[in-house]
Amino acid sequence: MPIPTSRTKNKAAILIDESLCTGCGKCVDSCSDFDLEMFNGKVRESANPVFGCIACGNCMMVCPTNAIKIEGRCLTAGDIFELPAKESVSDYKSLLSLLQRRRSIREFKDKAVEPEKINQILEAAQTAPMGIPPSDVHVLVLENKDQVHRFAEEYSVFLKGMRWFASNWFLILMRPFWGKANDEMMRSFIKPIFGVYVDKMEKGENWINYDAPLAMYFYGSPYADPADPIIAATYAMIAGESLGLGTCMLGAIHPFIQNSKNAEKFRKKWGVKYKSREGLFVVFGYPKPNFKKGVKRSFADIAFVR
Ligand SMILES: Cc1cc2nc3c(=O)[nH]c(=O)nc-3n(C[C@H](O)[C@H](O)[C@H](O)COP(=O)(O)O)c2cc1C
Image (tube, rainbow, N blue to C red; front, side, top):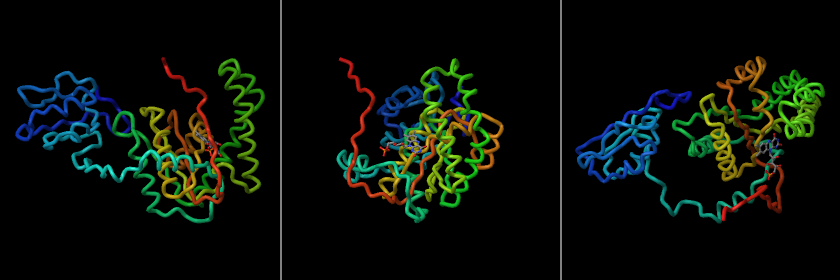
């Protein structure tokens, strides 16, 4: 059975032009689904595919004679393009500099992000590895400060109606079910967040999304791998940095707009098509702070197996 996504439940069609096939076998080697095999010196569709063609496109990208075409699962031969020249690729040093200069930005200049830059962020984010093609990442774009602010105001009202979630009686009730670490996180992080988000907003301070001039919400569908939207959001963040924008991820919106009737209403109102296991907001804008120094961060643990 083909792998379902929110966009398609079919496998892609494999079209082979035998007159162009030289029998080099590169497509067979690169096929991620064992969908192709050699027969009498030519490639043909395998009788025993694992899932059916998932439309990764590898075969079209390696074929030296354009003898193979994939149609379906949101892919066509027209999606194949010439690679940028190797010399135009950023090297490790310039990539590391970009990453080291990045800081989470929570204060933005009163300047809109140009539509061209919004498109560039989306273009770059769509190069992210996407699990099983086609990508099941959905993006909601709030493309100006007014939209971003309105979202925060409505989210704050929505959150106010959920305050019971961080109340003492609920935390005591839930502790045996969700365990010590969750209990500690709820008390020390989530409970104060409810207060900060709602109370500050009522005083005119937006700590939810900082009145950024641009926000993007990356989320999946019930079919998506939970990692997919997070990876896409990370790519978008790095693209934003490369365009001279400051960025910040916002993790405290997605989890609360998943599991209730009101959450469903809120999602519907804002055009969020699915509830999903993971999702992430990223805000963008021209940064006010001008950091002079960086800060070294570290993983909790890096263990090499010897
Ligand atoms: C998944 C994720 C969620 C985050 N959520 C928020 C958030 O809701 N609000 C916020 O101000 N910062 C948020 N941040 C930013 C972190 O607070 C920030 O990365 C951290 O303070 C380290 O600072 P740096 O990014 O400048 O290194 C989030 C970061 C990540 C990775």
